[in-house]
Structures are given as structure tokens and as C-alpha cells.
Length: 329
Image 1 (cartoon, one colour):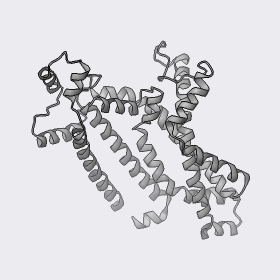
Image 2 (cartoon, helix red, strand yellow):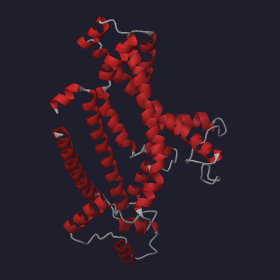
Image 3 (cartoon, rainbow, N blue to C red):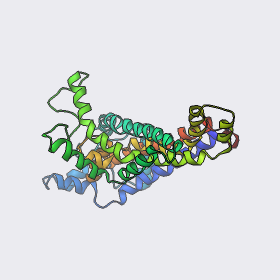
Image 4 (cartoon, rainbow, N blue to C red):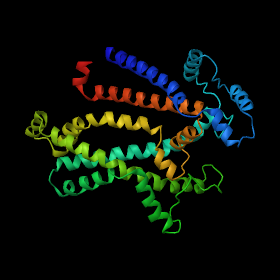
């Protein structure tokens, strides 16, 4: 219980610090919402009229900064995130985020879990059979792929599977816009086909890190006394590999996986931008471009909460898996 209370206190303190930075950083950025709106309207609307419009949306730059900050904290906590002052002028921020969130969770979330699962499995086998054929081929190959830039891999896949093959796989948007969204086989198939290239890009560039770290953790763990004891007791190789070595070798990776899951909410900005995929990462890019304070602040808040919640869950999972952590807590 003491461990849980300590972690919850850390969660709340970090959240407050992140929300405070979230409030001030956009206001230090060059430009302002009034200037951005003035440029988009090509000067057809006067600055006074634009200022009045923004005030009606809850943006009050001339209000006392302390009052703005307190109102902002209250709105963030209660979910009153205001109206967009960017390209989607006047649309509720909650609705904009709600439309983009499922696409990010479906693409980035599933791919992150798949990369972690496959990378952990390959790394476990590679570390167990150190020096074998699998260990000699796969880790070096995937380490190289993990060092490749996201956008470069994305462009290569578009060239190889879309441009050069006359559109064999779609390279733009999240589904065929001639279809009516629903659970029909045609629409579901279109969604899946549009997700193949961005998902493959994420998988290729992220799986190598999980393979390498799990392999190195396995090699270190195999030298521990409890693994030798398991072998001396005559346990099967499968039992020693998964029940003794892999279970302990995976613990250091849990923190990294928790961070990865937290950052799932933020999307993959470069990939979503290259594939014009309407997720939260692409939404964040547009909100920064348009100096859309309400949307930026809501997105940063979601990203912060997601990362902190993932780390908290990871800590609890570590305590559950490792008796030594329970003793320290």
C-alpha cells in the first residue's frame, strides 16, 4: 500500500508539472492565434473581429495570466477543453480528438504490441541459443533496420508497393473515401489495406530494439545462480528458458514497453504525415502549424496522462512479477 501511495503521489506531482509546462510553452511560441487566423483569411477579417471571435471561443489573451492558468487547470481536469481555433474553427476539441483517436490506437497501438511481442520472442530464442544461426543473422539485420529513419522506410515502401506496382497497396489516407464507413466487409478491407504500409514501416523500424535488448538481457540472466539451479534440478529447457530466464530478463524491458504504450496516444507524427493518416500525431502537427492552443493543450495533456498511466501500470506489474520489488516496496 505504501508503494502504491508513493507512486500515485509521484503521478500527481508529475502531471501537475507537465500541465504547467503545457500551459506556458505554447505561449512562448512565435506567432499567435490572431496572426494565424489573419493569414488564413487573407486579411479579409479585421484583427479586432478575429480577436472578438477568439474571445467567444474562450481564448482570452488579455486576461490576467494567473486567472488564465487557473481556468486552464480546471478545464483540463473537467474535460472542458474548449473549441478549436485552427483549421477546424469552432469545432469542439473533444470531438476532433475522438475522431482521430481510434485510428491512432488501431495503427500505432497494435503495431507497438506486435513489435514488442515478436521482438521479445526472437530475442529470447536468440539469447538462449547464443552463437547459433538465428543469433548470427536476425539481431544484426534488425539492428540495422531500427536505425533507419521512419520517413525513409515509408517512402521506400510507397515506391515499392504502391507507385511501382500501380497502386497494389494504397499509400494515402485511412480508407477509400468512396466507401461509406461501417462494418461492411468492403470498408473493413479498405481500412486494413490502407494500414499495411504504415504498420510495416513502424514494425520494421521498431522491432530491432526489442530483439537486441531482450537478447542481451537473456545472456546476462542465463549466468545467474537460479538459472543454474533450475538446470541442476533437471528441469526441461523450455521451463528454464521461459519460467526462469525469460521471466526475469523481460523485467527491464517492461519500463520501455510502458513508455512505448504511453506514446501510442501521441501517434507517429512522421509516419502519419507521410501517409496522410488522420491520427493524433497528424492532428498535433496541424495544431502546431495553426497555433491552435486549445487543441495543442488537450493533446499534450492526453499524451502526458497516457505515459504516466503506462509507467504506473508497469511499476505495478513489476512488483507483481518480481518478489524482490515487493520486498523493497
